[in-house]
Image (cartoon, rainbow, N blue to C red; front, side, top):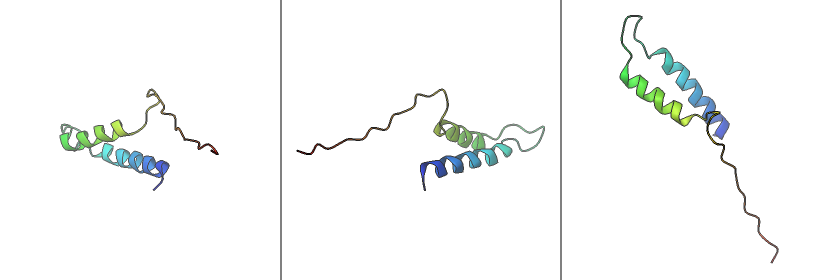
Length: 62
């Protein structure tokens, strides 16, 4: 899978799990689902994070 496909998959998984955070309107937050959501949120790129530049090495003709 490409990087973009993995990000799309994580985003979709986070959206699905977001629906299961609350069991009902008056029910408390499910801790197990909340932990997974937080881990996904940490893994997804954020606009405020510093972008990492991709560096490639070039070989000389020598």
